[in-house]
Length: 416
Image (tube, rainbow, N blue to C red; front, side, top):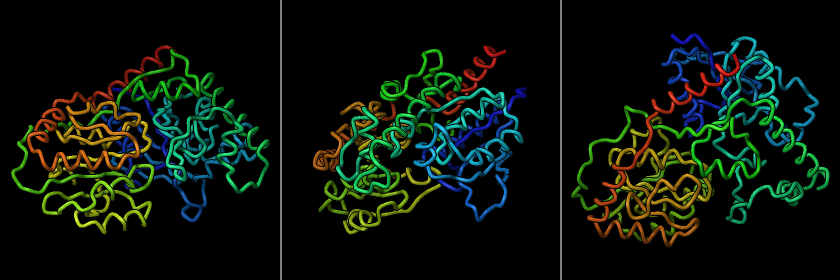
């Protein structure tokens, strides 16, 4: 029986937030607990009104959850090289002292200072990092420039990033901002060179993108794809239903970055007797949501707790993002034999155009509309894509958890 302990770190967890990274973190917590680890999770979602102390402790299904205060991400990182107010680290220090983990696995530390990684290492724990997103590359959290509807080419210079962050509102001068950004980048590189023991990547494509900007020593890099829960894995392939209406589905926050702005043009004037589009997700952009629900074939169904709550009657998934680093929803569609129409973001390479779905250019609503109309008109094509989706190879969550456990033990044995 495993007697080791692991503390996971993320900005939130269900039931406080049902979105990709919190849900992945909860999967890890339960999976590692199933392997015998004593598991804790530190989440940065505690408001000052909720506790006068440094953390609030809860227990969920045997997992100890430490809720700690969240701080302004931009300010924390721009001051990361010095962090003049060391009190910001006190909650993390007290959690580490209370839980005494053998491993600290940082899925994300949004809302916390980067020094959390160093404090974890100083506690004696082996420090792991899941590099699934771009918060350490872009101070805006992701490189999609909504105002321009385009992707940033990357942090090619501190001055360029300073201009992007400051915009027209310039409380400090550009040179000072650029200097702070340079110091932030140098500190992050130090953390990956000297403090972090291992880094998980879900895909080789994102690893190649990430390491353009932050170098990760090869000995610290581990490729572990996200897995799908075994109980939710691929059902037996069923025939395309004979009903006239096809059901398309969009899952995720309804916002510009996720490509939800492509949907009104793609589904305009479609007869609701022939097709419907179901929307499931948080309402980030109310104006866009209103524009969508004004279309007769579109129905907003709110959010959900488990993906199986909503996919039983879905024929085709729609994932039209401008930028992603992986896309869990895309793989969950495929895992249930549901073909996907996706844009060509990082992580969508699992879609083989014309085999298990369609790939279209980013930001192209007419290309999305063409594929939607083709599927409405041709049930044989839909049946073919369903077969391809059902045959798509995907790892299970159990396989992912076992891989994480193997890496933990490899690093533990190396240290000892």
